[in-house]
Image (tube, rainbow, N blue to C red):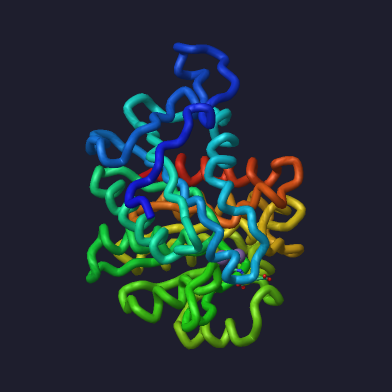
Length: 322
Ligand SMILES: N=CN[C@@H](CCC(=O)O)C(=O)O
Ligand SMILES: [Mn+2]
Ligand SMILES: [Mn+2]
């Protein structure tokens, strides 16, 4: 297992060019700096660092449908053409991909964790492109390492699922939050978008046992969004730091067919955008990951494109509001 991320090809960051010098016409591909993590200098102004996690071993172990390992590069390609509407000085760098090899999930999560904490040590904000939702565990390891073991950490997961399965046999894409909550008494967990029939009663019971806070997808009507965003902000206020993870299967299957476990009653993209804006606008929010985009199962690239737009929302929130 390589202990450093591998650089991506510049071909991924290409797209329409309206003008080569006028900044107001720029898109991501004209701004992104491909760089190596080990030679990266500490940022002076606010900077986001993209890192990919080419991994679907957790999905395989969780009996899911494979394909998420190729999402990081697919999301980069979709992000490349989005307009870059950020003032000069603030930067975006791409430090490459960590790749899971030979089914060695735990080793790959550790490498991702080290890379994420290195990004923090360079005064940059990590944006992690998964990968199956097992990506979250590496993200968490990096955050915890950065903030130290005494700080309280609020983990916000936008997901149809709890991912609180037993890891007694092995960790997977369905176990991460139980792994964290059973070992880290300074972490708490809020899930937004839970499907009543996307989780067994055993998982609801485990959520109650571990004091997990959750909001059902069906509660997230337009009329109730103000109340929900207020309770999200209250959760954030209770912690020293917050990290945000998006499991793309929380979205309605009509908008996001390209996931391992689609949700027929999932959230609309607009609701998920509101949640991402709410969380990333907060100063305590340190980082973001997007997981479970599966280009192999996608229809006409729509899940990848939506994933890129939602990642853009997180980047804008973390770059502009913080
Ligand atoms: N990452 C989580 N995946 C879900 C899959 C559910 C399903 O396949 O229906 C879980 O483990 O609960
Ligand atoms: Mn999920
Ligand atoms: Mn999940």
